[in-house]
Length: 177
Image 1 (cartoon, helix red, strand yellow):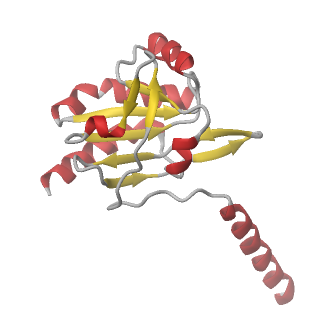
Image 2 (cartoon, rainbow, N blue to C red):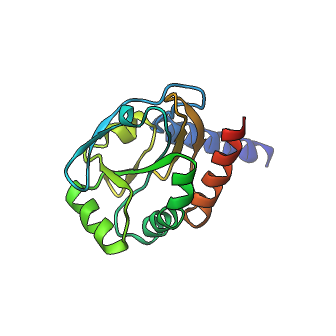
């Protein structure tokens, strides 16, 4: 019995190691945020450096027009004026196309920028990719970037319903320090 228990533990540990081998590494709080330039839903290009001097909520999400992603986006939209009062901008990133983002913004009344990362390059640089049924998608992670371009806080495995409120609370605390 002890032997089978030990083998079971070793088996679970091995599975964890194998699964973890493909897990992208996220830049940690305190590190410089990786620079990027991506297309927006209106066809323009946006770079992280465009927002130097501002707080940036850079959130990665799996797919336009899905329930969890819609809830998360609508909550950021609902709280947008509070973010603007703190001098923060919201940027959403997924591997969907700029045209898909344009349709998503129109359908849901989103006025902040959604950025298209169709190859998943930027999502990968932020350790925010996942495989879903053989397709690479952005994982639901958020990076709060300070006005100097450093990552102030990292959120992984975000819960869409409460995420915006948590980011606002943390942003308020970080601005005090």
